Image (cartoon, rainbow, N blue to C red):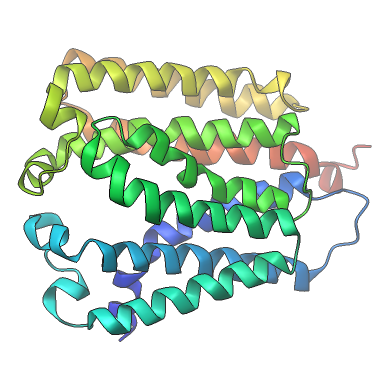
Length: 292
């Protein structure tokens, strides 16, 4: 039963969402505020239920699409391991519970949770994804909101520069991440009649757009001192990851996407965690280094 539940809620993606959310939470947390396990666990629970419910609802919405794609034909709603009615009840319950828990922290966190569901399960699922080859670009907005929800759970002023930095990193990261997968599973998307860059424009133009967003993504990471306070860790972590990420991209580009696909994919994903957690370590390192 747990396997079915984890497949329905895409547990692996949820873990990634929680890590991003925790980075936002730790960055937005006021140093002067006494730490509260209740507050932290409420946030983790709220974001977990929200993301799990939203992802489960997406599977309910896309049952017919999943049937047509080899990559998704083993999902529980397609195989009949779970009925659509049960999946809908689970998804709505989890989503409502998650939103309620976030509202108990701050109104801003709760409203951002609602907005993320509307954008992902509404606009992205029904309009951007099935009708636009660049649907991943506006679709990256709800994908980036978990880190902002984490920030808003402690500090409702989400337009602070440090919050903007975290959102931009999460937003820009998603285009290389998604378009790489779209290249890898191009025939799946073609079978499902989903317009993506590889199916509509080909791999070479897709690599161009991946490179464009990767440059912007790395540029924001390198420019992080303009958004927030940085220290020695910025030089030791951000610069090496930015360098090797770009190095892997050029190797991928020169091979026209035939070589080093997985290496670049992993560098993209791990770099995102580095770029959002370096500010966290910088902010809280005084606890361990006795820095004032």
